[in-house]
Length: 112
Ligand code: 5GP
Ligand code: ZN
Image (cartoon, rainbow, N blue to C red; front, side, top):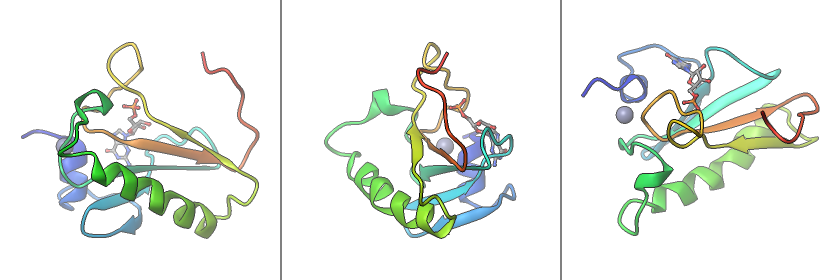
């Protein structure tokens, strides 16, 4: 399968990894939108939040378990934003579910 985030998870494409375990990997976004901007993904290929179900959703809990640990390590004491873009209208450009974590500056709300 030609999936860029599967390739990152398999180390076929280099990335700046900030966290890894058997189920999850987190790495810095190539085009950061904030002083701290990393992505957290399941190693298993799941296309988007729209494809989550009872069988595959446990890893999402793991992702939300590790995000505060990584955020603390990267100095986001003042808060951060977790973003999941789902599908075309949601602005998803990579078809492997991922959670953006952004921080290090005051973020505007609502998004455009
Ligand atoms: P989306 O728009 O799908 O929510 O987010 C995809 C994100 O992946 C974008 O923020 C983009 O900068 C990032 N990205 C795309 N290709 C690569 C890559 O090869 N390496 C890394 N580290 N980030 C990537
Ligand atoms: Zn994938």
